[in-house]
Image: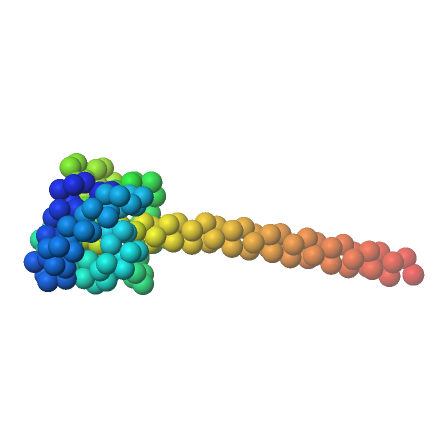
Length: 187
């Protein structure tokens, strides 16, 4: 979670360099965040209307010296996401976006987390290329993907139920035909 003092200092200084905030605004924001109940600095900045999403993505890109990636509205590859457990993706605020040859492109809210690369390596053997993104958006995308997967299972269950009912109806029709044939034979 992006809450450390170094991170808050770094992002506010980056926003000042990008001329999105003045130094006095940055100092006031740091104090307001410290006094707030927000856990994640990025969420605080956006929810309080202090910076726009695209401005924060630009600041993250400059801060981490990586390209930024806005995950909102992106359609993720199902097979790629299935390579990782949901709790791992949420705990690290990461989401894989695509494989390019033998390179896995991953969006992370904190791509400099210690041991992140080896942990990803426990699930895949690709070389990893990081993009930086907003933690809240990444976690929402992970949750949305896994919710859809649960919905798909229930749809599969509905299809199984429909097939079972159709099979029972077919069996009843066959029984009725046999009964009719028995009555016709007796006449």
